[in-house]
Amino acid sequence: MEYIVINGGKRLEGEVYVSGAKNAAVAIIPAAIAANGVCVIENLPYIEDVEGLTKAMTQIGAVCTLRDDHTLEIDSRNITNCCADYESVRKIRASYYLLGVLLGRFGQAEVPMPGGCNFGVRPIDQHIKGLTAMGATINIEHGMIKARADRLVGTNIFLDVVSVGATINIMLAAIYAEGVTVIENAAKEPHVVDTANFLNILGARVKGAGTDVIRITGVQELHGGTYTIIPDQIESGTYMIAAAVTGGDVTIRNIIPKHMESVISKLSEMKCQVSTGSDYVRVQGGGDLRSVNVKTMPYPGYPTDLQPQMTALLCKTKGTGILTETVWENRFQYINELKRLGANIKVDGRTAVVSGDSNLTGAQVNATDLRAGAALVIAALAAKGETTIGNVRYIDRGYERIEQKLGSLGADIRRVHREA
Image 1 (cartoon, rainbow, N blue to C red):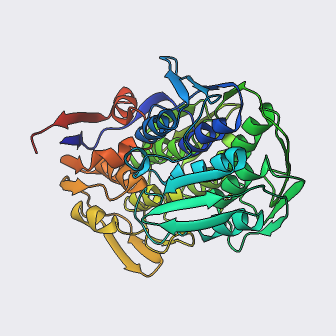
Image 2 (image 1 turned 60 degrees about the horizontal axis):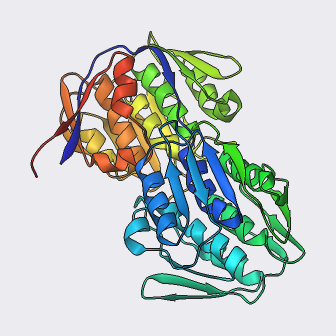
């Protein structure tokens, strides 16, 4: 059993470099299946989800070579198996991208129902709606999604809700569909754009990514290519919030400040000093931070994946902050763990009311999902005494070497191994 142990109260100072984006990597790795050639993916984060997807790719016949310089080479020319292995992908939400890309290139796919963090109902109905509209037949049997199509034909698809997963999955299938596929009410997140850019490098014809209408003109074949993944928006925000909660002075490098505008706006409203450059953001905490109200929204709004971290920060501000979660209906499961540290939070449905000036003290807590784990780390950095965080596997799904990166900024943090 692994735990992260933090002795709080240390001010964070210095520079930290952000890894490649998890949410882009877990889409781009499966997208490489579309290429009848070799793809080289650079700036890859070394995280659990990437490892699981790489195993799944190998199991269906792709040749994957992971290098020491955060680079993954994928050769998909000899894929012979369109059935993804359950054990490799059962913990990964993004495994569903194998469905769209295998269906698009080979006309068939069998993928286990997606796993990932459990913070509410996360249906795949919009994925199925889009793929079916292009001509696929989809059945769910014994926990497997089975898709078949003699041919896929482009069509207009209106998503009933803004869904990153459905947008990308439909895009992956549509690159080989006959004619033009139009996705309306498409997600605009940076990793949607990154996936589209990667496909275009390989010879796809995707236009409009980053807007709410994406047009994909089908092609006959994609070739290999080299692509560099964008920096991780959520990791960037996590370290920005960690700097604020400790009253620190941290420069977060290798990021795209444009992607961080909603977080910068909230931290500035809280009276943090925030400055930006071409590839960095500097956050200076210090003084009494003011409570704010936060409402999660699809990009470019405040991201749901930074909601738990903001909740932890609001525990150390002046006044009362209100968090409204509009994306997932049950993303406050971690609140009870924050309360173990002394947080004063009341939850009513999708709204959490956070009383600032909480006297946070160390305790033994457990991560309930990936971003909840990051929130506990942030709270522990501000708490008095020692905090032990269990279920570290959740944190490892999305953060590369989190203890080393925070340790380099002055945090008293370590990973320990204990017998079960």
